[in-house]
Image (cartoon, rainbow, N blue to C red; front, side, top):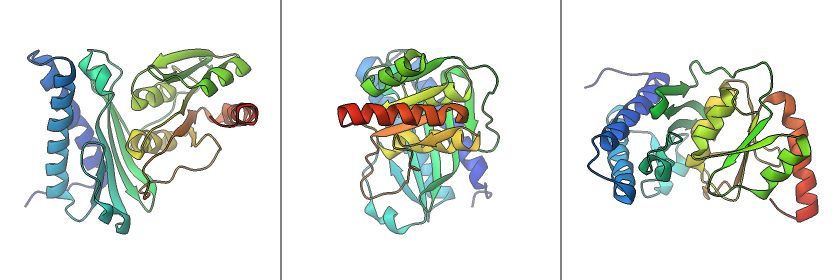
Length: 252
């Protein structure tokens, strides 16, 4: 029987271990392109599943890389994970990919970790703190599917638009103060945002859907198409601009 590891430490170690596995798979240089991404997804998912089975056998799991077991809906504790967020960036040798680990209790992330392995950093709910001070005057959006609402808000508020991969990487750049906000619209799932939401909320950032509502996890439909992460002092201005965009265009 393994020694008991509390939820906060388990979350952190899962993110750390997954990052090491993924760097090892990539850095030996034997795989490239899509095959590399698929191998990273599969190996990291297998390791996380084994760890959770040993340490939290009674908890449910929702992962991008595993079949959805709807029994999770009857469990108050659900691990929502994305072993490799930003597979395209990982396989292409970029740094903007991440590891997402979150423990959800009654629909809310209570422990979460986002690893940025190429930067040697893991941000987690036990100690994350958002950078304060001068604004960067930047808003970060998807590198491959930048939303029109993001462009509208950036122009409305006089911010520069920055494109980046991985939802986790974008959210952590807000936490680090490199961007004032991360705006997403157009499609994500619970595993894309659960860990970033947990870390950023614990760090004092504003986190919501684009209509200002709280995100809720472990739902029947795991689709979560829009999110806002931002410094709290500009949340009202961004949400007002988003509402103006929706009034003009009918949707995000």
